[in-house]
Image (cartoon, rainbow, N blue to C red):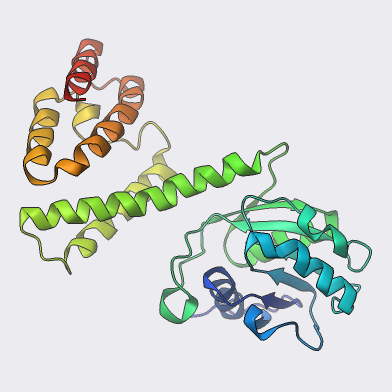
Length: 280
């Protein structure tokens, strides 16, 4: 059941792609008066909102800010935020003086489809917010209404931050695709493989959030199971050889975590390291 919240905020979302449509749907479900306009429809005749969210491609943000300023569309009392991860508030600098402030409001959430198909659950997600004080305040308020955690990290490197998000989100999707292919080689039907891997990925995410790292690690590397690891590699070479290098890289990344946990003697992890080196 949708939450109904009288927050006294009106939101205008410009850009009806995956992120924009999903955010608009979540805001409406939270009881926030929200308008959504596709970028391909062009600028509206007027904007009546307290928060203007720009959900367009990174390269379009700065010219869009200039167009909004020149058209005089943003109300003086409104703030303008964008949802790009790799950019701070500066692409919206042209709007300073024309509105109450500008900010970055990036939800660290994977938007893989538009809201008409399957919007992601935003609750418990994180939102990185930085920019002008009033814009930051309203962005943080919106995030909390959506059940998300707003964070402002001083001195954050936005490129490294965005790369970390992409490595985990997109890397996990690519890894799942390889895992699905291996499941099919093992005899699982193509339609079933993603249904098996989805809950597995959710359990990993929950372990990372609840237990933290390195404790979220499981499997043969954590146990120091050299023989089990070598059986995996032998099977991969026989059934899906193109995945061997990926498996080796993942196993090597697990070794420091396993050593920190210490569920097996140190020499066992040394043996795993030698086995991985031989398998290269």
